[in-house]
Amino acid sequence: MRRRPHRTRLLHLIAVTAIFAVTVMATLSWAWTGGVEQLGLAGTAPVMTVPGGPLPPLPGAEPAAEPGVPAIPGAPTVTPGASGTPAPSGSAAPSARAARPGAGQTVLGGPRPALRNQNGERCRTGRKLVPSCGVLWGVAPGAFTDDRGRTALAAFERKTDRHQAVYHAYHKGIRQLFPTKAERGIAREPGRERILFLNWKPAGATWAAIAKGDRGTDAFLDRLARHINKEFPEQFFFTVHHEAEDNVKERRGSGYTAEDYSDMYRYVVERLRGRGVDNLVTVLVHMAYVPHTSKSWFDKMYPGNDVVDWIGFDTYAYSDPGYGHGDFAELLNRQSSARPNWPGFYNWARSRHPDKPLMVAEWGVWSSRKNPGHKAEFYREVGRQIENFPNIRALVHFDTPHNQDGRDSSVDATPESLHAYRKLGKLPIFQVDVTPALP
Image 1 (cartoon, rainbow, N blue to C red):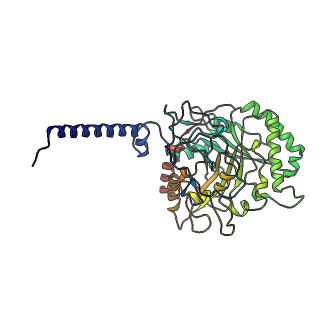
Image 2: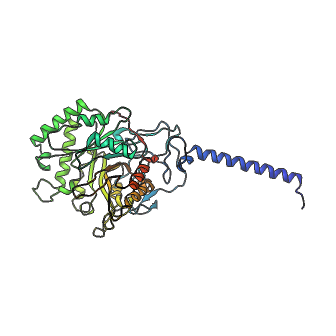
Image 3: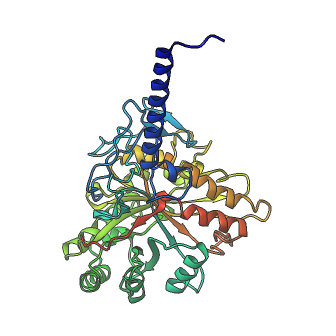
């Protein structure tokens, strides 16, 4: 065989050496920017990536000390459709009176879970409790049981093998002040601080009467303001009458029209704020039930941007085939053949309120003896699909062995479902540090 000239062999050696050096540098760069974590291998702090690269966080999110890794030039903006499958930018957005995006938003309304910054800082809560990156993870434990509060929370954290960033509790009427002593203790547990998410449902007066200054409600709100100012200056999530759609009576004079609700919600928030309560992070919580959300009065329930910090919605998956049976994308964008113009709640909220962070304020999977494996598979789908829905900044599970209809949403319904839920809660995107910052 003919030997190559000496000069040719020398050039070949130089080329091989150069290729080797470029390969080593590329590998080190990949590892440094989080490639190891993306493969699930041991490494440093978690890294979250999203299609198209990170964008600035929502207004109110605490800025990182240094800017995040820039997006890849020319990468497409990704917009999830009702199925959860990303569609390229330029696709038609859902029809609604789309508001103009605010600072830090994509054209289609996306705050995205960001990459960690170059200093490797972890995701953390900031102003209005918006996480600097990632998604808050929480629970309403022991619902519809006698074993609620701290005991139920401790049991839930033990079985799921992780700390809950958000603790969700419910209050009704004008007697009990909140946060209670037990709730304050949950929020301030040393080294395990949590965000309180407190629902308050008025009682004893109609929405219309409260909005006009009902005496009993006013007296309670004034006592509540003094209590919060004295006992709990930390930020906490607060909503007024969640799932109010179920109680709307769109009849003049009923006191419970959609506009009555809007007026009542605004009145409550403004009265508390007017008495010095500036640590409320208000969440408008809808019932994401298509027959309600597609009503002509649905949009009239919105009380205004200045009194709503987050948009929340409650939605559940069903293990048996039929209504509500599907994956995580179906849960967030549930549609109905009877209401073909409804785009799905996530798509609606993303279009109508592009600058508001979204919270799944209650979610769960109802168990089925006929299809016991669906719950575990659903949890796996959440992990695979969550980054397709970047406006979601908090997921709060509603954990009960039986609701009013006897349905079971408990994460440990089967050993397989518990194992899947544990793995879900440990994904990097759900690791957000709670900083007990004051407003």
